Image (cartoon, rainbow, N blue to C red; front, top):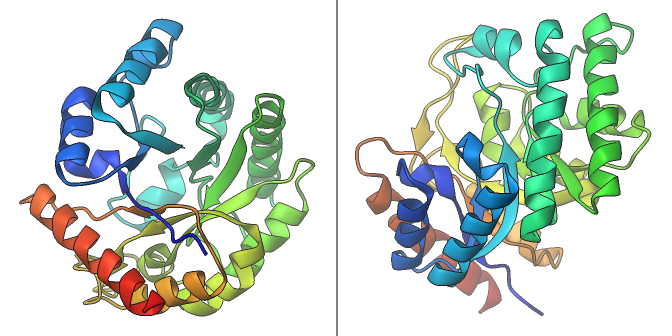
Length: 278
């Protein structure tokens, strides 16, 4: 059975230029990457051609593209609720249009997975904010379907059961990009039981680890893989038992020494895959 590749969320290199980030990924031994936010010039036909050349030059494959909206803040839970995703009413149309540009870029690059945070979905389906997010995701999903793109909603800002209920209300099928550490960040669920619920909808996976939040209302702090409480080892073991073969994308942030942390994280995950397969 094919084992999943260990890939890299490109933004974690902290490189300011995409060509520099791609070169770093290759030097660190990766063959698969996922794009985060790109400069606006890349969401154009000329930009797509340039990115395609850079990927070819470095011998890299892009497995996904993550939509990141201007103005989003992850300072604390309150900031996430106010600024992230499709919940801010005054930004919905602008962000849907931007999402469509990102989908076009992914499709033109041959990337078949686009992921994003929709924001903190209200728990009540009758809430105007819930309906606003639902309508916006429906618009984005319909466009993605036309372009042959799978969508994966990032996890963790609601429980697994709440996310499943939201997905079931959509008119176009949408999957999830599983990130166990985000359940720790928002204190919403234990990662492994959440994965068991969500696994039939999983179209992508991010790997990172977090320590618990220091206080209510705060987001949690990054931790080296295996030293937080995001159940990274158990997550990898579960995915391998299920026969998951899509890339495991490292999303390990370290402003002090990002490349050292990325290299150590890659080794950590490769070792866990080897142990589980041995």
